[in-house]
Length: 449
Image (cartoon, rainbow, N blue to C red):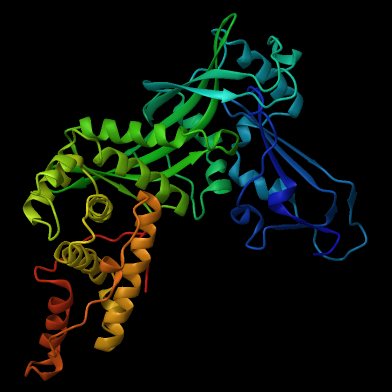
């Protein structure tokens, strides 16, 4: 890069003004390409600092752009930083950095005039967090000084809101830029689409005048009509801000959404829109824990042998409908739980499990597999099977045996059969994957061949 070119992610500094330390420390976006272009660079300045601060509860924004030097000798056009950011920030809510500090002071008092979350309180929880700050919250917020590295119990609340919730539309307009910074491929949600609903997390801090609230994270969901007369709930955006990550807030948020979805008789299924790898891991962990509960229906069915490879379609579908889980996520979770209870020394059980998993992988990758000849197809399928099982092993802690991983020899020579080409392809699939092959929904976690 030239000395006049800055990395936009590094130059952009975000801060939650008024949040308890260390959550009021500066943090940086993961993505800035929706704002500054695919290269994520800003040209024309040296020592650039794009400080975008938010009141920690109401998210009122303030922008300050400073630099050590500006290139005034070039004929090239310098990037307009304020102009690039302005379409993504509500103009009517923008304040100066000094005004933002005053807003944060008032909100931190926790009085009746201070910010309060919008919507219905649906869940509360606590976290024991080690205070890593070197000083107290500062005299600015009149908090009593605490020793460094002191463990404290912090309180958090989850709220449910819709566009009809008073004040939520304006608050959400201030939030939206965070989705561009941290969710790849994110776009702004239009508030004229009535079927959206939201869950937000706030830290709740007791003060002498009441309670102060500081934003932690959120998720958005969309309600699709699903025949016959039901709703398929699609989780769209999911974000915990960097200062609050790695404290299981995402787990609390996902499980709260899932529990309320299960209790909603109008909803038949929870789906996820284009999940990131990080969210996939969180979702898998939560779903696996839910299905593995000792007194749960899934574990009871597995222990009783009524649910085992090859899976009885009706029993599996009845259980899936009870848990309202998307079809392919359900299949993957069952495969992991089956692996946890599989006797890998039993050749027949290992074979049944192997064919169960390969059947699903075949269906997901069918179009690609049929571009290969039969030998290549079976080899590639088995390689994918091994990759998936390695992932399952990491998630479950189960060691994999050679009995389970070894590729079986194919005994039937399909090419010798007098069948039309299409029938031969179907026969190939039945030989390797068993009968009763059926279509399912797409899944991100299945490796693409």
